[in-house]
Image 1 (cartoon, rainbow, N blue to C red):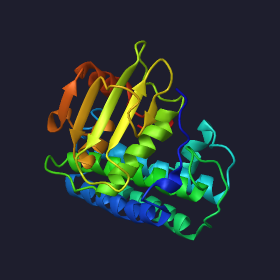
Image 2 (cartoon, helix red, strand yellow):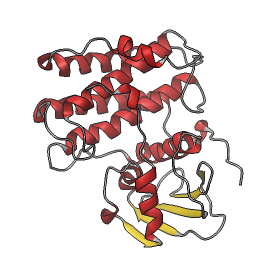
Image 3 (cartoon, rainbow, N blue to C red):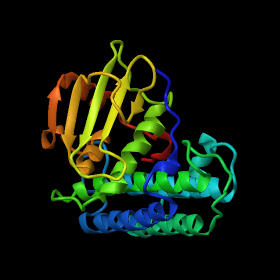
Image 4 (cartoon, one colour):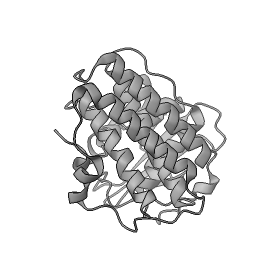
Length: 272
């Protein structure tokens, strides 16, 4: 099966909406960090504290800003990451350092031209759209991490943004050779959103010895189906909510395989 080309223009969430989402999610992340404190444990990232989380996301913001403003044609070298992020501020200043990192990125994305040309992680209608989408979803997921440290309910996620995020994750990272999701025996995992979505409510993830391929229509029976609100499907794909909160039917080992092999890691953008 050949992977279908991901056409971001078909999605309902565009550049302006992604920038709005980035603005909101970054503010919520900083507010949650301020509320729980830097050394609160992050249950959804077991080895991290909120301090680690802020450093990671702030560095990602500055990394993306550097690529966009300097019109980089390739990602910064590993040795540049510390230089881009700058020195670790004192704990008393870390939340403000994060807020400033977030603000810098927003200002850049709001002022760059729609036809921006630079290196981008995944296929998009334009580099500006690609970076706005990537940063909106990275920040949304890590906002969920920060709020999980409070131990209560997380802020809701817009259904269309969640649907867009599923597309972005499956066609972007997990549609590339970087994905670790593999199976010697072909498996199909179906996601079924119970919401009424503008772009449909089903995804079929075809897992094999190659990078997963996602289609929006069935090409055969699914080995396992996960059903529920699109917000929870989005979080489940990122391993940020339990599938106990969703309806699972069929071969549960496919869910276990996804959970074990799908985490997205940025080891070079984390500092101790």
